[in-house]
Length: 151
Image (cartoon, rainbow, N blue to C red; front, top):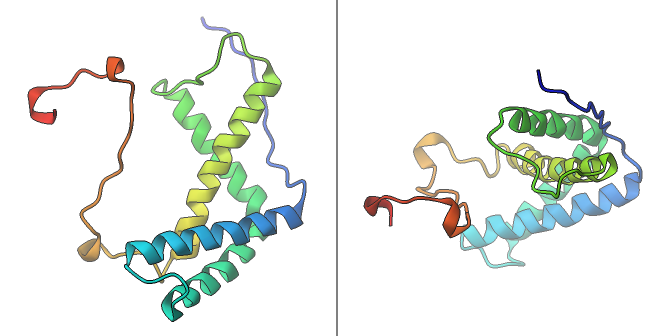
């Protein structure tokens, strides 16, 4: 039987004002990405409307950051427990370093959640209007065996 070290990572909000500033920056970045994807000039009325709406929604989400972070941690735990992904760190690793890595990964998940939640009804494409896009993943060349069809 495998032995495990149990680490409990709690979602704690240390500085709400910093979180609000980060939310505003994230609203700008996501509005910029959406505008550029939709060929809207930055600073145009539609872009400004999108930014202001995202800014309002992201500000509201700061009231739920601990809950969103908790959900991010649950997602990361599930991915790690699946065995399909592992922490990319020298072993053994100190528990404080593990907590920091998990916190950073959770922040990435929260950013994605915020993008999805804030974009509801203004950015979400319905199935019929979803663009034909994919998500690119980069892996070291020596880690992946490819068939002729995919090269």
